[in-house]
Image (cartoon, rainbow, N blue to C red; front, top):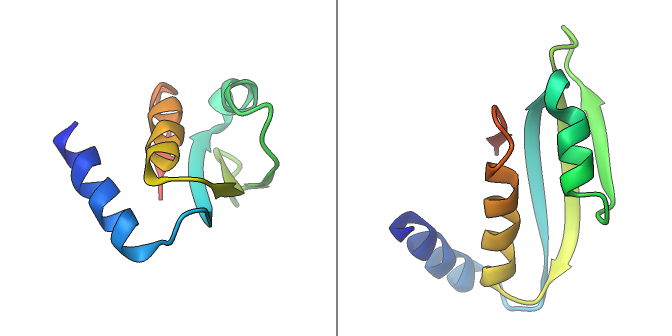
Length: 85
């Protein structure tokens, strides 16, 4: 959790909240449904990898604070095999 505290500090230095934040996640194809369910209320773009093994999801969202950014990453972290960029 200390790494999230350092991340929050960096976010607060770089952003003036509320602000737009872009998330990018790479998910194994077999976990795409799980991702879509977890983020069903979010608007995202998706793109399959060339080999078709992964799908990248890009979410752009206006957030009120660095806490909301961390909450989104914690939610994503529950999906096995996800990569956050």
